[in-house]
Structures are given as C-alpha cells and as structure tokens.
Image (cartoon, rainbow, N blue to C red; front, side, top):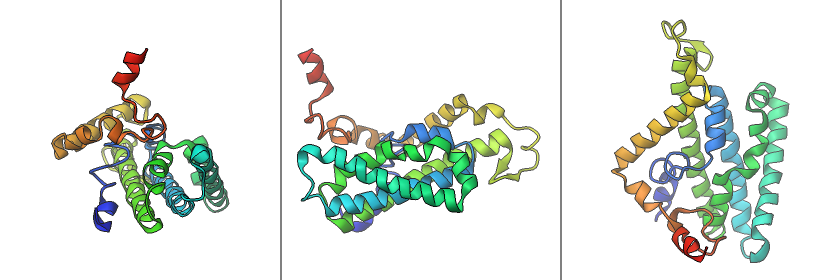
Length: 225
C-alpha cells in the first residue's frame, strides 16, 4: 500500500465509523449539530495524529507486556492538552461536547489504530494513517450531523433553512433518529462497496483487539466454554 492509498483508505474503504463501526458512542451523541461534529472530529483527529506519531516513534522502546497501559497514558496526555486548548479558546464548543471531549481517551478508533498500525509501522506512515482515519471520522460525523440538524432542527451551522425551520422532524435530534441515520449511512456505504468492506473486515483480521486476545476466533472461544 502506497502513501496515497494509506491516506485515502480511512475515507470509505476502512472508514472507522461506517465500515469498522468504531467510535459509535461519540458519533451518535455529538452529531445533532454540525458545529459539534466538526469540533469532535477535529479534536479526535489531532489526538489520533499525535498519539500515532509518538507511539510509532517509541514502538521499540515500550515493553510489549505493558503496551496498552502506555498507549492509554500517552493518549490521555494528548486529550488533556486538547481539552485545555478548547476550554481556553472555544468555551462554547467545550460546553456543547461536554463529557465526550475527555472521553476521547477511550475512543476505540484511537486505541485501535495505535495497536493495529502505529505499533507496527514507521512514524511517517503512522502519521498518514492517522490523517486518513481522522478525516474519515470527521466526514462521517459531518454527514450524520448535516442530515440530523437539517431535518431535526431546520438549521445548518445555526443558520435557519426556510420551510424546514417551521416543519422540522424533532425525532432526528433524538437517539432514535441518530440510530436511524447511522444505519442508513452504513447500508449506503455497504451498497457502494458491494459488501466487500464488511466481508474484508469481519473476524480477527478486522478486529482492533485481535492482538490482545491472541487472534482466537469467537467460534474457538465458544468451543472452549
């Protein structure tokens, strides 16, 4: 895989939200408005980029037995810095994101890329991977937020849209509307790819925790029980 393919894979082919189905909690929670979605996407992308670079640079130094705790400490440090910057320069965004900003620490996308990619590749390649995945996460959030805000509130980035502002579908800003839009977008991406993405990422090969569990399949675990 060349650098261009590495960058673009996170947009559609391995989109962290719509294909790998990671980061579902913040995706559903902050996608009620475009401004919140962009803020969350940018914050997560910055943390992902910084953590991938540092973890890749230290991959030969961090002991394998404690790599996961080390990753979490590094990610938590970057999240804290991003949160402090947001509080200082964008207090309105900090208020709208609420608890979901510090919860970037446990975002499966960031920990998953650290374990699956940054831990095994060079710094430049890891940075490119982070940029692609961060862009894919942000675009998925933006798309979901646009649909939910336009139809649920009749606005886009706070700007009222004629007709829709007076005839909005309020359920779109609630949990059921979020799940509905999420499911439709996953189906659309799956249709565009012809189902190839879902098949490719099914099982141990597409699981961020495969290295942790020793790549033992679910069927084998069931047999052991």
